[in-house]
Image (cartoon, rainbow, N blue to C red):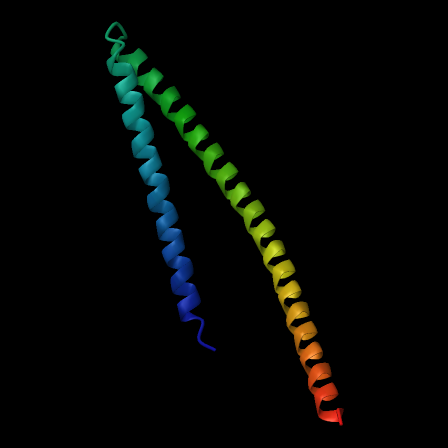
Length: 113
C-alpha cells in the first residue's frame, strides 16, 4: 500500500498547526500593542516589557483554551460514538425481531389449511 497520501495529510496538518500558532502569536502581539498604546506614560523599556509579558499571558491563555476545546471534543466524540453504537444495536435488534416475526407469520400462513 502507498503511504504517500497519509504522509501528505500529516504534512498538511503540521503546516496548518504552524500557521495557526503563528496566527495566535501575531494576534497576541497585536493585543499587547493595543494594550500598551493606552499607557502613554510608560517608557519604551517598560512598554516592551509589558508587551512581552502580555503576549506570553495571551499565548498561554490561547493554549489553555485550545487544550480545553480539544479535550471537550474528544469527550463529545466518545459520547457520540457510544450513542451511535447503542442506536445501531437497537436498530439491528429491531430489524432481526421484525424479520423473525415476518418469518413466523409467513410460516403460519403457509402451513394453514
